[in-house]
Length: 90
Image 1 (tube, rainbow, N blue to C red):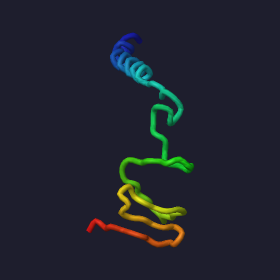
Image 2: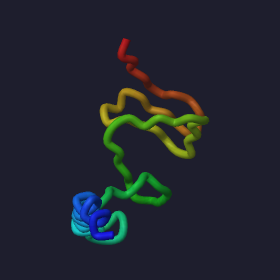
Image 3: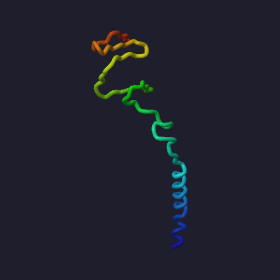
Image 4: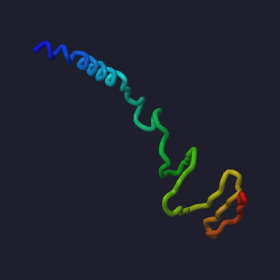
């Protein structure tokens, strides 16, 4: 009986060590999202929101107000439904 136990002792010790390492390595987030651990998602609201990187929209893009970029190269007037001014990059 003990010979079989000694045969598997290295595997048992390794598994216990691995389980202890996994349990010790886990740390909970500092707070509930987005408090300190992840940025807030783009969502509804009246405050201005910024996203770094590209924004890819898979469906229609609908606008309820005016659109301008930071260089004012494209200006869309929502009351007339037309692009007032546009400087294209080509």
